[in-house]
Image (tube, rainbow, N blue to C red; front, side, top):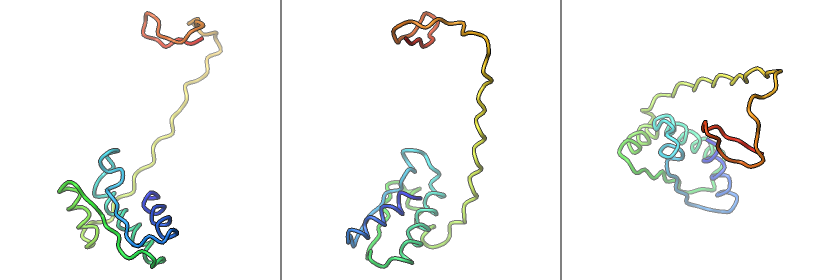
Length: 119
């Protein structure tokens, strides 16, 4: 959760005493709310354990689901989330030795087959 960590670091460096966080990436990018809440609270606690300059850190929620997840994360009722499995490596298709079948035009656009063309 580098967004929380970096924000806390910058706040401490600039003498900020109070900071508030929304659930970063949990609505817009659909990051799992319980997992995000757990990691956000853990990141904030880890930072505050080594840096006492901040006096107040607020977690601002909008939905009841966010509120419940953050409340459970703060009280320790939320279990440690399972690690996210790594994404499989994307394999590139083999390079064909034959010349391309489509001739490119000198302008960008779309041809009759809805295929992109470029110049």
